Structure formats: C-alpha cells, structure tokens
Length: 208
Image 1 (cartoon, rainbow, N blue to C red):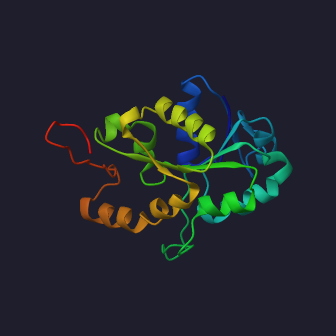
Image 2: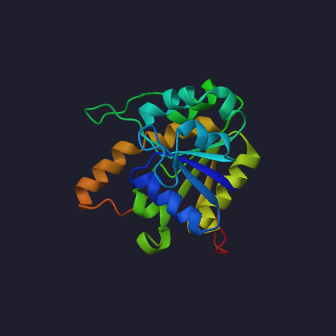
C-alpha cells in the first residue's frame, strides 16, 4: 500500500520504517523537513497515499488535516494513533476523542483508531516487547478496518491480539485510557508494557 506518515518523530519514524520493511511504499510528511530524503510536504505525501497515519500530537491532528485539505484527504483511510493532552498532561478533550473529531470534520475519510494505548516500542515489535498484549481497533468502515488490521499484522501483531471494539465512537474509551497508562509507567518505572485482555473460558476451554 502507499502510506503517508504525518510526523517525523519517534512514532512516525518507527512506524514508517517497519511498514516499509514489510514492503509498503512509505513517505513521511513534514511541515518543516520537506525536501530531505524520503520526506515530502504533508499535502504532497497525503495526495499520493492510500493510508494516512497521523503520528503527531492529537491536539494538532484536525488542524493539520485541514491545512492539507479535504479535497486531498478525500476518502482515504486515516490510521490515527494519536493522543491529545494539555500542557499540564491532562486530557485535552474530556468526553470526546481525536478519532471522532476527525470523522466528524472529514465525513468522507475512513478513520480507524488504533495503537494509541501503548509505547512506540510495543507498537512496532509487540511480541518482543510484551508477548501478551492487546491492540484495539475502532472505526465505522469495515473495509478500512480490514486494511488496518493487515497493517497491524505487518507490524507483528497476531490476529488473536487484535480486538475490534466497534465504531469510531469507541475511540473515546481507548483515548481516555491515557491516565491509566501514565499511572502504570509511574508504578513500573518503564513504558514497555501494554494492556492485555484476558477472556473467561467455559468448562470446555472455549472463550465465552
């Protein structure tokens, strides 16, 4: 697939590198570094892409996509791993989510929220970092979620570790897990961990 990664920080670079290694055509889009090898302007990167990954702060996502233009974004898949915080590291959008904001502002785009409950090292190498882990997926478009699930597999996520929560409205739940993430970092002294969903089994051993 042709993938545009918006952002050249740790998350954008790690996702872009891993997906390129899996055989995808990846370009990075940057507001300040366009012209460097492999880096285009954000608008140029998105124009030629099938999938757009918003690897930038959540508070900047909607305005960045507005700058790129609704005509360029069109009906592309938007994989949103972002988190939105105030300078005081509190939730920037209580009662709302970046994923929902994108879908509302760009109704033709096919938004999928995922990878936002973990550190970047777990995003791109889940089995090496945390053998038992769950990655959540939220979105309204079934085909977009299927495509994103394929990208998650390319990042190393086993099928059984991918949990489809439903529509983009469920992104509210995972985005608001951020305080739990930071509390766990403080308790463990590391960010290399992830949430794992353990399902109850019936007497035959089958998941309920």
